[in-house]
Length: 400
Image (tube, rainbow, N blue to C red):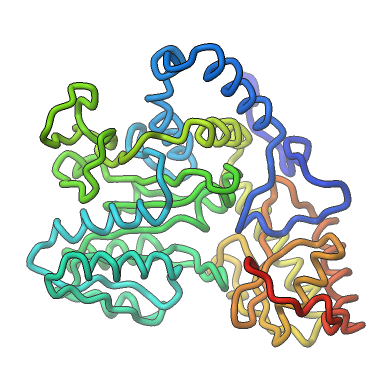
C-alpha cells in the first residue's frame, strides 16, 4: 500500500519570503504555493469562461459543504456536519442564538475572561437584541466548570486562549455542560489545524472557527460552523438567509430551512475566497495531526528554554506544560509592542496583544528547529542591546 503520509516540515509547499522566520501563523497563515494558480483558474477558467453557469458547471453552490468536509477531517467532525461562509462573528452569533433557543427556560450564557472579545461582543449584542433578560456571565478560565449550573443555557468557550495559548479540556467541560443540561459551543479559531480535535467524540452541540490562521485560507477567509448531526434538523436559525432555505430557487415567500447543515448558510458564498481555502486545505493531505502536535510541542518547548536562558526580562505567560497549551507561546514584557516591532524589522515575525503580551506561533508545517534557534538568537539580541528602545519601534499602528 502506498504511504500517503506527509513528512514535516513541508516548507516547499509555502511561498515564504527568503530569510523570514514566520511565527505568526496563529494570526494569519502564510500563502500556500498552490493557491494563486487555483484562484487564477477560478477567475479565468470558471468565472471568465462560464459566467453565471459556474454555479452549476463548476458546482460553486456545493463548495461551502465540500470545503467544510475538508476542515471536518481535521477537527473530528462527521462528513456533512460542517459548512463554510460568512465571518467567525456571524457563526458565533448563529450558534449562540440557536443554543439559547434550545433552552428557553434559562437565561445565562457562560463564558470566560480568556475568550476572544468578539465572541463576548456577539453575546452581548444577541442579549440586547432579544430583550428577554438574558445575562452574559464571564468567569476566570479555571472557574468555568464550577460555574456551570442549572441556570446556564449555553457555555461558549474558545478552546485555546488567544493571548496565552492556555488550552481548555474540551471533553471534561463538555461533559460538565451536559451534566447541567446546558448546550456547549466551542470556538476553534486557535485549534483547527493546530492540534488534534475530536468534536464527534466530545459530544458538543456546536463548534465554530476561522480559516485564515492555521488553515492558511488567506486574509478574510470564510469561517466554518459545525452542528452535531442529531440536532441540526431541529434548529431554528436566527439568520434565515436565502441560501439556508431548503429550496432557494423556489423563491418561496416564507422561510423553510434546509434539512441539514446547509440551514446554517446565510448569504451567497464567497467563491474566490472559498477556492483559495480549498487549495490551502490540500496542504493537509496526508498530515497526521498527532504527529504535528508532537512536533509543535517539541519546537515550542525548545523556544521556551532558549528564551528563558537568554532573555530574563521576559516572563512566560503560557502554561509551561505543553499539553496545557495550544500551538503558541506568549511572553510578558513591559515594552512588548516595541520589542516585537524590532523583531519584525529583523525578519522574525510574531505579534503583540495588549497590554504586554508577545505571541509566537509554532506551525511544524513550515517551522523547524533551526528556525526556532535563529528566532531566539534575534530575540536575545533585541533584548540585550535594548533595540526595542529605538524611537522607530514606538510608533502606534492600527494593527498589532
